Amino acid sequence: MQNTVAPFLSKKHLRRGAGLLLAVTALIWASVSVWYHAADRGMAQARARGQADLRLASDRLVAALSQYREDAVLAADHPYVRALAAGDGVWSAQEVAQTLQRFADLAGAEHLVLLRPDGRVLAAPEGTPDRLPMTEDVARAAQGALGRFHGVEGRGTHRIFAFAAPVFATRPARGRQVVGIVRLTLDAETVEATGRGDPLPVWFSDDQGVVFTANRAGLIFRRAADAGPADPRIYPADVPFVTVPVRERVIAGQPILCTPQCALPVVLDLPVIGLTGHAEVPVEPILHEARVQMFVVALAMLAIGALFVTLWARRQALADRLASEAALNAALESRVALRTTELREANAALLRTQAELVQAGKLSALGQMSAGISHELNQPLMAIGSFAENAGIFLARGQQDRARDNLRRIGEMSDRMGRIIRNLRAFARPETEPASPVDMARVIETALEIAASRLAGVPLDWAGLDQPVWVMGGETRLAQVVVNLLSNAVDACAGQDRPQIRMRLCAQGGLVRLEVQDNGPGIADPERMFDPFYSTKEVGTNEGMGLGLSISYRIVQSFGGTLTGTNLPDPARGAMFALTLRQPDTEPDTETDREDGNGNGQ
Image (cartoon, rainbow, N blue to C red; front, side, top):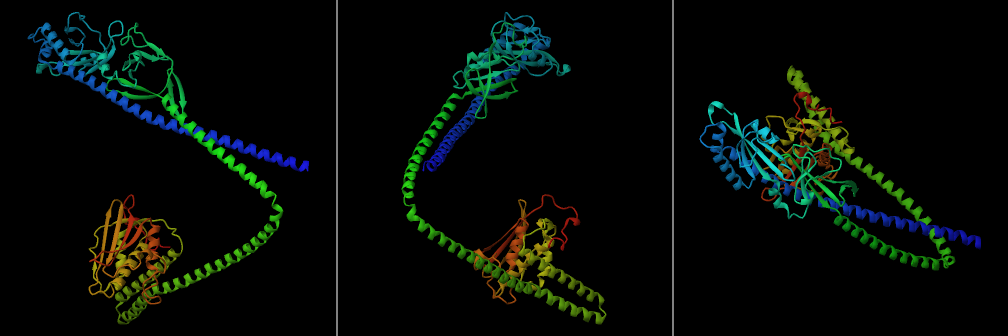
């Protein structure tokens, strides 16, 4: 007894340990997954908000600097400035300097100076050196273009933006010669003031890797620890750079910068002003929210697990009680096993009977299709007999041309019989031939020739086509579809006082649509009209077996098209069938691209 119980307890404990390990693994996996997706979703939303805030701040900065640039251009076009720069001698340097200073005061700039193309000062406020350095903006203006510059002026931390506009000669004889340069200088803090209250820290760095302007004073002159030496023409040696170590991390699949607080970086290039916008969206609130969601899911799973363990314990108690009744259930289980065997044998017999019924149904379907084949071939056979008899008469009369024409029609009827058989075979098996470009106008002409005898006495409203309309399909099978639609329309018009068939073809949006409309009584059961062997006509008559629409539906589907039928509303009455096919990507250029009438209908 001891040897029997010990292994049982060992297996039981092993199963419990495995279940506990699986539960803990599922808890950890679900918690981590919730945290990851919550953090990823939160960072995506935070990045979108940061990009919007950075774009707003960047637009504000670019708009402000663009306004100052336009002020420089306007000052360069002032008549006082142009006269002094051209050496006309009308206005003195002091008068021009006063005019430029008033202009600067109105624009909100620090000062405006007039220079020679070589950098010598022509008109400027008092205390301005006689010559200014050839900075990038002055050099570009000397070449006749607008120049811009940013950097630290003098010694210390006075940051400036500068815009230089060329002054062209006023005399036509000099052409577009640059005779002077107007340089506008403004304090960088002027354009920073509007963004100081923004909740998101935003800064703009240049190609030196230096933060030149920002909405936080502590960010100015910050640069990466691995950045090279700054250009002394822009930043003098005494500029107090702030080097900040940057650590890169990846949290929830997103790159994060820690300086030292971790934030989501957002960058926007601004080539118009030669700066790059930056913003950092704090990620700690996002991670805190993700952790909260993770703990909520973990607690919910623990509660569900506790409930599951309670139910499982009750189930084990019930199983132990049922084990004591095993002796009483043994006889019942034996009877159930015997009954199960009997049911299995009965089920096998039922399956065999079902298979026999299916086979009988197949044989019945084949019999109905044989009747349909005889109906479809009846008209061509009668035509062949008539043409053969006429050919013999014409030969006896010596009218060889007319006899040859009848023999040619016999060949056409034979081809038509072959096409009919191939179409019926296509109904019985899946389509295998790929669709190719086919001229729908030619298909309709062929169908009208085939159905000419059926259409006799029924007016057809069809304008005809004078150019190809290309679709993806097979010429033989499409002709059979059109013939079936026309034949059904003729049958529907039978008994009408004024029968009428209307056919239209149009192409739009890469699709070609053929509509065949009659004024008959309409479709009795639209839901079943495409079912095989469904027909409102009497079976066994020469009116058909109800295969035409079903075969046509399968043919059109094999080309990737659609075939639909609807009843027309009163007072029009009748039914309309619409055949829709897609156009080829490129229209064929030659007749060789048209399908051979016998090659695509196998």
